[in-house]
Length: 413
Image 1 (cartoon, rainbow, N blue to C red):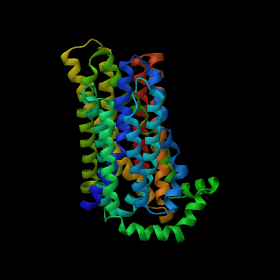
Image 2 (spheres, one colour):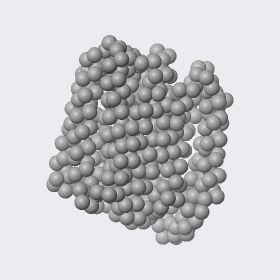
Image 3 (tube, rainbow, N blue to C red):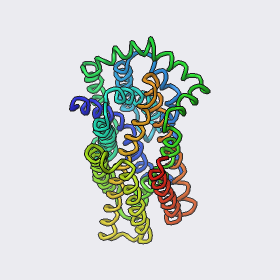
Image 4 (spheres, rainbow, N blue to C red):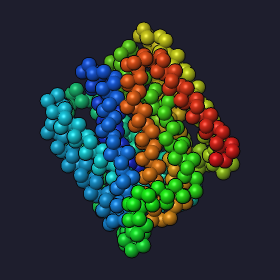
C-alpha cells in the first residue's frame, strides 16, 4: 500500500503544478500589474482542457497502457516547461498563455491515466480513503510548490529559472514512472483493454451511447448534481478573498506566504484528516454523516470570513483574523474534497472495468466544470456588485449546498 501511495502522490503532485501556477501565481502577478478582477477571472479559460477531457478519456482507456500514457504526458510537460523558460511574460504574454494551455491539456490527459490506474490499484474502502488522500494531498502539495513557493522566490530567481526547475521535476518523474514496477500488471490490463475493454471504450466514443452508459451506472445522477454544485460558493470566496486582501491588507509577498503556503498547508491537513476519518470511522459513523457535519462547518466559516469584509482598514488584528479565515476555509475545503473524490471513485467502481476510467473522468470533468464556471464569473460579480454583496451570494450558495447534502444523505438519494 505504501508503494501505491508514493506512486499516486508523486503523479498527483506534478499534476497540481499547472493549477498552482494559474490559481496562486498568475492572479497576483496580473493584479499587481493593474488588471481588473473580471480580466483575471477570464484567465480561467486556460483550464478549458479539463472540461473537455471526457472526450479523449475513452482513447486513454482503450489504447496502449496507463504507463505509456503517463510517461508520454509527463515528458510532454517537461518539454512545455522548457519552452516556457525561453519566454518573458512581459513581452510574450500570449506565448505564456499558450504554454499554460498546453500544460493543462497534457495534465488533463495525465489525470485520466493516473485516475484509471488508481481505480484499478485501490481495493476496498480503506485503500480508497488512503488513496484519495494521496491524490488530494499530492495535488495540493504540487499547487503549493508551484503557487506559493515559486511566487515567493520569482522576484529573486526569475521566470526562466522557475520553469527550468519545473522541467527537471517533470523529467525526473517521467523516468520514475518509466522504470517503476508498480504498473507491470497494467501491461496485462492494457492488453485486455485492447481485446475486450477496447470495444466498450470505442463504443463510448459515440456520444449518445456514452451518455447512456455513463448515466446508467448506479448512483451517477445524484453524483453528477453534487459535483457540479458542491464548490460553488466556496470557490467564489477562495478565488476573491485573497485579492481583497491584496487590495486592502497584504503585499504580494505576504499573500504568497499566508495564502499560497500556510493556508494550503491547512488544506493538505484537511485532506489528510478526511482520509483518516474515512479509514477509521466510515463504517461506524458513515460518510453521509461526515459530509453533513463538514458542510455545516464550511457555511459557518464563510459567515466568519464574509464578516471581515466590513472592516477594510488594515490592522494587525484584522490581518490575523483574515489569515485564520483563510486557514479554516482551506482546511474544510480540503476535507470536503477528499470526501467528494472518494464518493466519485466509489461510484466509478460500480461501472464495467473497461468504462471505469472514462466514468471517473466524466465525473471529474463535471467537478472541474462546476468550479471553473463560477470562478470565471466571480471576478465580474465583485467588480459589478462589490465584495460584500458578492460574498453574500457566495454564502447563500454554500448554505444551499449544505442543505442539499444534508437532505440527500438522510434520504439516501
